[in-house]
Length: 156
Image (cartoon, rainbow, N blue to C red; front, top):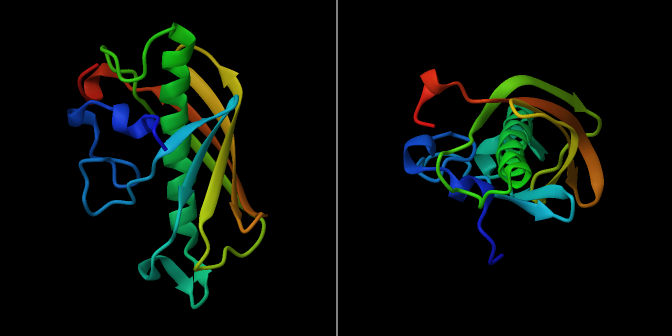
């Protein structure tokens, strides 16, 4: 993709998240993008993400839904404000609530696709419904209530 990933637009001092931080070489490095009026991300689990042989660990699935949700919220906040993604001041969101329903076993060896749909968009709170699919089969559904990051957590 030639467009900038939402997470790559975060300022360096706010880019250390294990799930999506570009400055965390040990993390998942999840990258989210616009997909029409929704958001999309892809991730291929590694062997260390195994729950039982052949299937993905549920904690990874929750982490991917979480980071795709907060990244999507940040991008939507910039879009709603009519600002360029990554412009200053930063608009980072953190998880207020994360709900995940596992609806089918998630197989290893398959690229996972996350699609985010915006349910509610307010200045300080954005709600995103997310589906996680493997080979076209929905394996998990999640909802992230993302809250604009308080100034006490870092630079704004």
